[in-house]
Amino acid sequence: MEYVEQNLYHYVQSLDSYERHGLSAFHTWSIGQQIVSALDFLHRNGIAHRDLKPDNVLVEIGPNTIKAKVADFGLAWHAEQINIACTPAVKMSGLSSSSTRSSSSGVNIRWGPPEFFSESESDEVEKKDPAFRTLSFEDYKRGDVYCFGLVLAYTLTGQKPFDHLTTSTLEWWREQPLSPSYSFLSKLRGPLPDVIVTCIQDCPTNRSSIENLTDTFLLDASPYENAADEAEFFSCGILRKTNIFIADTCTTNIEAGCYQTGILPTGYDHRDLVCELDRSDFPYKFFPDTWGIEDDQKYLEFYQNFKEKAMKGEIENNPKAALKELIILREGDDEEQRLQLRFKETEYCHQQAMRFVWRSLTEEERNLTVPCKTEVSDCFSNTFGLQICVLTYEGDGNPQKFMFPQRANRTGIPTPGAYTGGAVEGASVLDYTPDGKSYDLVQTAVRGLKEELSIELSIEEREVICITTLYLAFDNYEWGMCGFLDLSDPRLSENNRVSAAVLQDRFVSGPKDKFEHSKVKFVPFALEDMVQFLYENHENVASYAKAAVVKVLQAYFGSKRVEQAFGQKFPKT
Image (cartoon, rainbow, N blue to C red; front, top):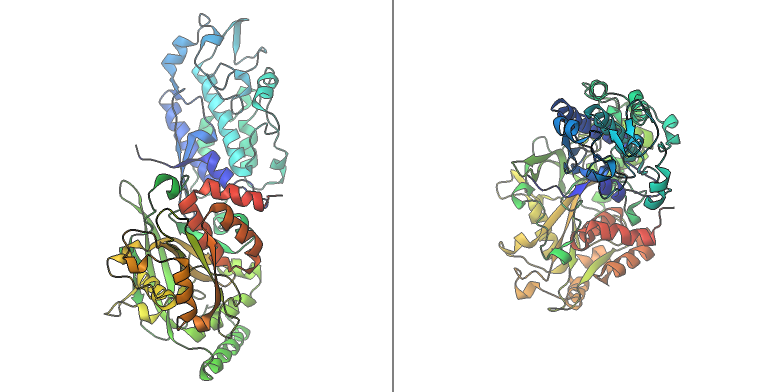
């Protein structure tokens, strides 16, 4: 079987923040649909899972989809096994089954249905003797439905059943029929509240059947389809309440970082980062059909303002490459993570004018204009940036340092005064392939490292550049990618394996950074030091730089440790 890195329980926990608990209704519905399909298949083939809980649902995370896989059949029984084993001649306390009360020997005390723990009389659980009872295949099917309701509620809210009780306390409380309370259900729209309520009924015969759940979930379209358009923004400590949407990343699910495994992430295949480029109809200017006279005038005002700056020499109206299409692929048996990007040539003044038009829109207007964050706006997508964070080489066995350049406060400089990370570049004609038909993202990284830090990489050394994440800065509607270059990588030549002191000298003397950056800061690349620096300076770090830094930290220290470290500095409440 393929390897799946995380389960539903840990995934929901990893996203928990003070402004968000649980997944969106759209993703909850999608996960529920997949689990119901699995249960329906099992039950029709005479198998009861008997241990359904978030820990036993594996998840593979895509940009706006979650693939759920029901796993762990260690307690699953076939109908024929149940009918033989669960007779009055078999003592309840002797079963290695879900009729035991201990979470270590049967159904989990927190996620199991109440009738499996109760000693009360029931039409569904016949008590032949105080020490014995009979459980049928139908009993276990209804138990699976109850567990499904709890999994659905947890996915939607991030709230475990009986989360106010310890496991030892639960062992006493569950001597009597007891179901968790979800008072929030009355506030939710759509069918999910009713589905959850009908699944977690105390009386098994009052619960929805798996056949009814199948009819409910296997609809042609999700009742929460519009919620898919509300793609959630990246939330991690310094990134809470930012407008950074992670469209795709190779580092999201890394539980153990490369400092533990000794294996650096490879990022996207460099062959996928040589992208199709459309240079027809330059300069590219596209406006939505819904624009009226006032919109045209607003654009022309912004555009003319930038054209005047270009004529004065304050900015350069150079050709640029803008992202126009994004396709995210999971191909082959191993579902290899790939991207297909298409760019179109435009000009800097048009880019900036459209950015200011976007900024003038209200939040509601932005969401109506671009309802789905993974779809590229043909109108407003005009800027694309690349950020390569840099880790220094301080000699074998010595701690590395992380480089934070700071923008100069000058006209034409984006995010003046803000800290960025390493080399930052915009998509440029300088990075087209020799035939002019493609745009090379890796070449953008190579050019930035050379111009800003005098790090000249050979053709072979380009492989060391690790680009891991594609993001959308929604406040400016700017697409971009980020990654890192580890200068301690042994594949680099000695000239490129340089320290913070060497980079400091290069930085202040480099021809470009005399204009673009005012200073540079080196922070010890230890998780605690990095989090402390970001805690003290987070208001002065560009939002896209925050995303880039978090992704580097996840690659080296693991996502769980990074979440915990930020959680201590940026509490959820």
